[in-house]
Length: 220
Ligand code: SF4
Ligand code: SF4
Picture (cartoon, helix red, strand yellow):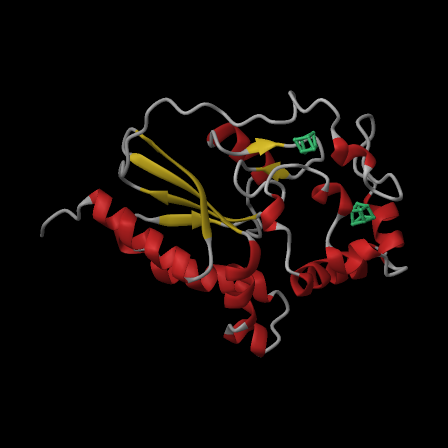
């Protein structure tokens, strides 16, 4: 049997992921392995999920279940391709793993990861591992925007000061405020919106409302 061409395999996987609404946040090939950071951002993923059977049948975690179903279908497990999901019971902490692994992904001043294209408006969906080097790279400079961000507007934009430079994120204050149905309930988080990166990827209103509702229900 012929060994599959790694570049062709990467291209077909990329096409499948993008058709399912995912974005490839970054890719590295080291030695005989390729690591892919798969995320979601904006309208394409939301449209795909909200038309999925997991959503229509009102599964408990339709986004996670859609993600696992689609990505597991795309991967060739018999050829050693695999994925780690943030919702796996034994998952690593992606907020630590990805900035340490992928040059385009950084830990932000706010806490969530930040990306040069999508800013703070993306979510981690899967870490895919292919058992071959698919791509070669020139030296890629690491994205690290927060150190040089002079005014750090994200830290002063929340109406209840849920974020600050000196204290951890106060998620209870955030959830309590969301119970009052403020603008950031359906318009998305003001602190994230204050960051200059990824402005055009702010969440569609229906998506922001969905995530804020789940967050508020869990913590308020
Ligand atoms: S506003 Fe500045 S400090 Fe805050 S997340 Fe964006 S780049 Fe980082
Ligand atoms: S969602 Fe609203 S209350 Fe919560 S951190 Fe963002 S701006 Fe603050």
